[in-house]
Image: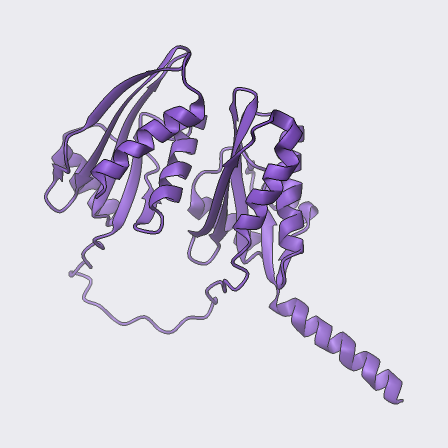
Length: 294
């Protein structure tokens, strides 16, 4: 009888531990690369999460079922709020997704972890291979391990304290360190996604970062007014990006929504893709925001 009680107690204890595990839905990474490359990156992410205490991975059958029922494909999901909704449908606490961008014979990998309750990126890690597919597994392991190293992160609970009632006519001013990334004419190209990832990684500790879904043309005053109202942001990292097979032309500028003016002079450049890798182009552009975002 004592042995039976001990067995039941052990099973009960294990069930409580399992209930406390944080469930992570791992999506296939986006990118114009072979499916085999994406599978390697995804599996290394899953492996790192499984081997992290208090984390479990949502079954792929569940992920595929929800994506099919919601008529979504993991490819092209760049809106964190969309990814958050899908994660909730899968019963996940967190969603891990990212992209793999080809850099000549190498690959630039960017991974993010999103809290499904807040729809905010709470962890991010990036890296590049140096030997093409030969070190893909090693680099994927390193990036995945960096992503889940903060095992003490606790997602916000569904039940929260009642919000303090506020006068709806009084809008909370944006935080001094709130930053909106806006890329025009399209923020969904592979280069644009890599730039967004790099800016987020570079300035994520100093700024609360959001990404504009679409960017309108217009005067500085118009853009500042529109996006302050929509995103309640103080600063805008505005990038005009034009790509061709031979060159990349960009204008990098920061706007202050409070003054409705530019912060510093815009940086305009034409980079020859023949002489520069994608990674060098991204670094050149982001380095200019080091100067603009003082």
